[in-house]
Image (cartoon, rainbow, N blue to C red):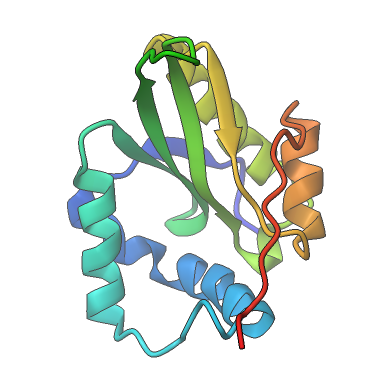
Length: 161
């Protein structure tokens, strides 16, 4: 494995760098939930989709790389939650994706990516951060728990029919 990774913001125009990392992440989802996810997206379409997400207002992507290799990424969003009759206003940081290359796992890259996202959320005025992950994804649950994120809402689902 290359030396210590550099974590940097990824521009939408660089979204193709995420394709191998995203493919591995997405393949897990396709295998676990083929009723929700499919693996039929062409690489160019997936790259365009990721670029569009990164370009959205409030969204950002952090890339961990070393020796010219993409080792991991996190796709995040700063969310403005408005007050209403029942809830308080707040700024929330939301982690949509975190992925680390198989050969780079268990080396602190996921933890470093989440720490960098946490720091960015704080610098952008967030007072809370959150994520979602599938119940079958034990490694994600452990990574997010290590970062201090604990389950707060349970979503249960089933197919109808």
